[in-house]
Amino acid sequence: MESMILTPRLACMAALVPQNARLADIGTDHGKLPISLLLDGHIASAIGSDIRSGPLAHAERNAKEHNVSLSLRLAPGLEAVRAEECDTVTIAGMGGQTISEILTAAPWTAQGDHLLLLQPMTMIAELRRWLYAHGYAIEHETLCREDRRRYVVLSVRGGAPKREIPLSECAVSPALLRAEGAADYLEQLYLREKKALDGMEQGTSENKRLAYQRALVQCIQSAREELK
Image (tube, rainbow, N blue to C red; front, side, top):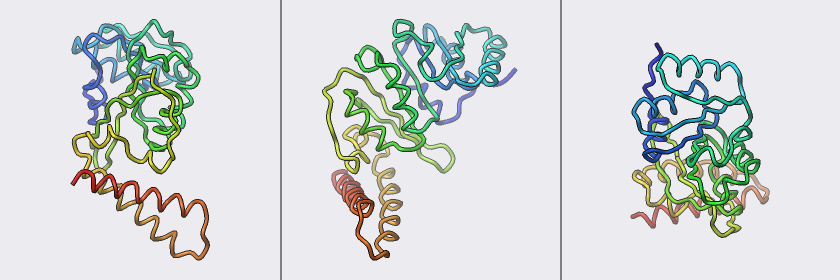
C-alpha cells in the first residue's frame, strides 16, 4: 500500500483546505492530496481531475487501497467539474500561465463562491497580474520550503474589482508581505533579479526588457525596505 504522507509543498496546500470542504483537486496526479485529506476526515468529499489517464489510474488504485471515495475525472483543468460539486479548488505544480488558462475556461471560479488554492511553479508575477485583471482577490499567500526551493501558495477568491497592475509590481503583493518568512523570500528574490539586472546592464543597448528588469528590482527593494 502506497503511503499518503505528503511532501512539504502538498502538506502546505492541505493545511489551507477548510474543514469539511468539498474539494476539487486539479492535476491530482496520484491523488495523494485529496486521499490524505479524506483519510484525516478533514474534508466532506473530493474530486480528482487529471489530463493523463496513467496517473488517474494510479489515483484510483490508491483510493481503493485506502478505502476512500474519490471521484475521478479524466479531463483538462476544471472541464469535468461543475461549480456546485465543490467549494474549494486546489491547483498545484503547474506554471502560472497554465493556471490562468484553467481559470479562464471555468468562469464560475470568478464569481466568489469558491476558495482557490493556487501553487504556481513558474510565472508567479504573471499569475498575480492575471488574477487582478480578471476580478480575483489574493486574500493570503503562504510560503513553504521543499528541499532548497521555496514555494508560494495563493489563497484566492473571485468577486473582486478588476484592476490593471504593472507586471513589475506583481512580483510582490500585500498578501505576500504579510506571509511568515516573507523577508527571507524577498531577499532571495532580490538577489536573483539583481544579478539578472547586473548582467543585462553590461550590454550597451537600452530596451523594454532592461527597463522592466530595473522596475522589477526597484519594486522588490521597496518591499524589502517596507518589511524592515
